[in-house]
Length: 276
Image (cartoon, rainbow, N blue to C red; front, side, top):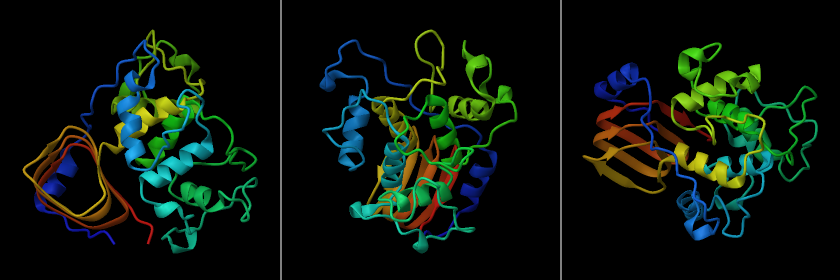
C-alpha cells in the first residue's frame, strides 16, 4: 500500500503549484525508417517496460482495446500478463459492465478496471467498442480523466484560441483537449490544427503515453538531490524522495510500495491510484 506521508514542504508545493513544465514534443522526421523515426525513443522506452511489442506496426490506428491494455500495463494494473481482478480493487461503486464486453470476454477485467479509474466510458448504448480506433479528441478526454486534470468550463481559460480548427472540436471533448494542451501533453499537427476527429496512430499514442509517464520507477530507490524536468511515475518498489524537484506531475500507482518525501517540490499534481 502507498503510504500517505507528506512533509509540510510537499503540501505547500502542491497547494501553490499550478502547471507542469513538460518536455517539448518530438520533431517529425521525413525518414520513415523506424530507427530514425520521430517516435523511436518513446517506443523503445515503452518496449523496455513491456507496454508495446517490437513487432507492433506503429503506423496503424490505435484501438480502444490497445489503449486500455497499454495504460493498465503502464500503471501496474496487469503485472506479469495476468488479467486484472476488479474484486481486489478498492472501487466504490463497482463499475457497470459494458454491454459488448460480458464477463466471459477476454478483456472483461481490463475494461472493468479502466472504466473504474475513468479511462473509458461507454457510448449512449453502453458499448465499449474495443476494436474501434480512438480519435485524438477521445484520447485527450481519456487522459484528462486518468490524470484527474482540472478543466475550466468552455476551456478558453486554459488554452483556447491556439488551434485553427477549434470549431471542429466537439463540445464534449473541448475542455479535455484544452487541458491536455495547456500542460504540454498534446500539441497541434501541421498548420496549427488539432484534427480532433483523426484516428490516433500507435506512434502518436506511444509519444503521448511517454510524455505522461515521464521517468518510470519500477524498483526500490533512494532519490536525493535530483531535479526531474517532466513527470515521474512510480509503479513498483519503495521509493524515498529527498531534496527533489519534480517539474511535472508525480504519479504513484499499482504495485508501488511506500512512497515517502522530505523537502520535495512538485510543480504539477500528486496522483495516487491504488488497486489493493
